[in-house]
Amino acid sequence: MLQFSKFQTAAILGLILLAALFGAPNLLSESARNNLPGFVPKGTINLGLDLQGGSYLLLGVDTDKVIDDRMKGLMVDLRREMRPVSAIGKERIRFDNLVYNDDSGVVSLRIANEADIDAAADRARDLTRGGALGLGQRNYIVSVNGPAINVTITAEARRFFSNEAVRDSIEVIRRRIDPAGNKEVAIQPQGENRIVVQVPGDDDPEALKALINRTGQLTFHAHDPSVSVQDAAAGLIPPGRILVPFSESEGAGQLPLVLEEDPIITGAMVQTASAAPNPDGAGFQINFAFDSSGARRFADYTRNNIGSIFAIVLDDQIISAPTIQSAITQGSGRITGNFTAMEAAETSLLIRSGALPAELKTLEQRSVGPELGADSIEAGAKALIIGFIGVIIYMVVSYGRFGVYADFALIANIILIAGALSLFGSTLTLPGIAGIVLTIGMAVDANVLIFERIREELLNGKSPINAAEIGYDKARSAIIDANITTFLAAIIMFQLGAGPVRGFAITLAVGVVTSVFTAYFLTRLFAGGFLLAKRPKELKL
Image 1 (cartoon, rainbow, N blue to C red):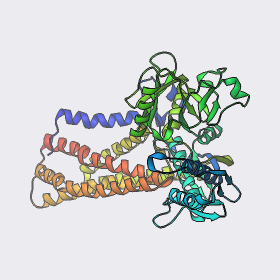
Image 2: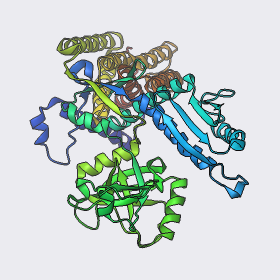
Image 3: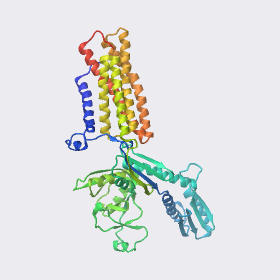
Image 4: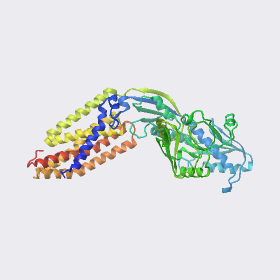
């Protein structure tokens, strides 16, 4: 129990040295960090918005457009529903007017033949049956007014879809500006259609706003060579076709292409996307992979359209227009536009995060100073130092030599926490400092359990070595049980919390792991080394 092999000893000490290496850049200035060799870690612990300030954005979500888009999509579905579909036995229902009044929020369909009104109403009801509001509730109301059939969205559905757009926008924004989930970005709804975004340490709010406001709508379209670009530019473009320009990354000056309006594949079918150097030339490319539905569509289309241009469109601009050389059946591909490293990384991030469900308008933008500022940092540092010194003195007074071992482990624990937070690029908030202070107490708690058990065994007449072995062995289950419950609580706080709560959860979770490691392994290494080398007959504890 007290014996460690040379490999185990080297692994324990090596881990602490590695943590010190990752944590050391926090003690250096930015210029000193930039002058470090390339193989030396340069990551530091970021300070949260409450400690260093950052960017503040108040965004408005255009929920009215979300409803308009749904109603216009319903128009397309109604038009398709009234067309003949011989496969399922439906006959064509003629209509002469299909309009959407965005003021009243009503889609109106005028039926040409009075005898078809009931059948048309039934088809409209079947089309709108069910929905997101739950069993027994409808999203739309279908009514008949003479030869016209009116479809109106309900007030409950309007609120639901508006709230859903806000929730989805928050999630997309979070994935775009904090894909790793460790920057303590605060993104919260405000009112019915507003979102507050606070990003700590961000010194370029314009770039942040540009990243957030990009729609991120990725689609794959077929090219229509039968329509000339000149005719399309002059307005002579048939229905169902669109004229789309190339993006600057693909090549400024290229003529736009006439594409089919309905996409073959949408960005929702893209499962992953990542940036990588282009192996066939200069610049970077974007690798992507489809889900099962997208992979099937991609394979079928490329198999049946070899030699055709397949345009990839992002936010109404063509970012790549390759010619299909062969069937692509593996469900993945690459976009090889003339991307820089930053453009490829940003574009792949947009694709991964998904499209915004609604347009966002910047209502307010400002840079904010620290909410608590330097005074809070100073107070937190004082609390940490006072608590640290107090614990060190208590352990030495209470447990003598073993207390000194526990203090060494406590110092190592702080080094491990700093190294882990620097490695993950985590953000330290004021609650995070509180989590570290709590960790200091928890770190010695495990040692107290062990030392008290050793003390009991010594009082029962055991030799120092036997007492230490029994103490570490019997205290192990209590230490693991107590720390597992704390660790699970930290995980739950991280998953369900936001902002400062996550900061506290991160430091607490990391502190639990490092505390168990230093208390059970490092102090045992020191204590075992002393007892096995000296083999004292008595131990004052």
